[in-house]
Length: 543
Ligand code: GAP
Image: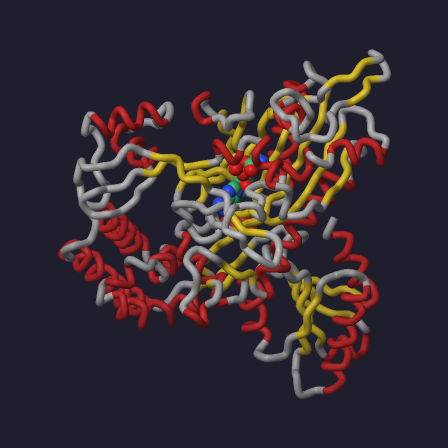
């Protein structure tokens, strides 16, 4: 079962060095995160797997790494200066500034069709402030999401040095279309791929790394002849869906959703979202849009754009004429994909039953937790309902529900109930002894591929052989670590929790016959392999 609560993933990420709150020595900076030693390996593997699939394994793609800071005119003619905004309203009573489209959707039960419809509802006093309930809301105004900065040593204050931190990597690809076409002598259809940071001054960041103000995108702009765009769109939807599935994502947690007309960005003719069933519900993982010829035309010299130096078009040898290609854009988030793979891979499993008296003690405590939640004043009704039904489900199924109890013990809202301290006092010890946390990450995504242990750390022969094996594995390109800081059982648990697919133990038999034990993370089966065959065998399992 994948993670059912984001708190469980956040807690694992902090505990095991995947992701830390940013600038924590100064109290942090809301919704910004730093990838730690294991997180950077995982995210790099996600980006590498994407690059390999969309650039190296295809014959019709090129790569690019464009600058983050671009001429401001790029954002003027792309339409972002005028339209890349969220509608905000001010509550005159409590002085908060909620997102007006979210207020509309929550209170009317559907998305608004645009700013005029939101403002008509505000004027008719049909919407209320979600914080204080007042109907005294200002008309909604667009709030631009692009971060501004200035180039040059002096900020003259007149916007002459104004540049934006790019809000999407896509525009770097469009403005390089001609460069790539000319230098690589490409024929349609072909595409350009890019991975890089993007910045948006999001009004409502949150859900851990799902929505942040600084994030990484993995984008493709795929150029086709007009008329061939719809078939190419379908092909990319299938291709990108399969990428997630091939890397182990569960089919039932991935779905394709057609965007409705009013949701479409200003440049899109059609857009399909690949959505993942995150613990907080189905949410966008990747958007695959048909951007038509909007962007190449927008950056071409014309009466509407006197600033462009030339035209972004393609000479069709067959038809002996110039044309402006259409563009299919599969646009994924590296952080979102990493989070989705983490949630999907997560499992807390019961490995042996605890003694009956321990189960009874725990059941009584969880029961009294449920009662305390019921009596608690000032807690939102839906939070109460969620905690009570989760606790009741756990009570009914113990000890089989110990894995779910781990999620409840890490829930930030559950922690505000006094009796949770007692639940944790008893529950954590039982969970530690009777469950195991495993990340069933695809071997190509796992931060570490192999961990090598000596059976006894005080035997120099075992240590020397284990260290040598680690070095050999690493030299053959298999990510390996050496560890001797605990008993083998404990070392296995640690590696399971971070998703290492294989653990290798060097024991006394190894000294005689040069074989080692390889233990598989998912099946927990052990096999004996020749030390010399280890690197090629594991490397072959990685493909
Ligand atoms: N060029 C098209 C484009 O940028 P988008 O739907 O706004 O489209 C594409 O973004 C992907 O980038 C999203 O599907 C998501 O994975 C990621 N993304 C967008 N905003 C994000 C944010 N604030 N935090 C993390 N990832 C984000």
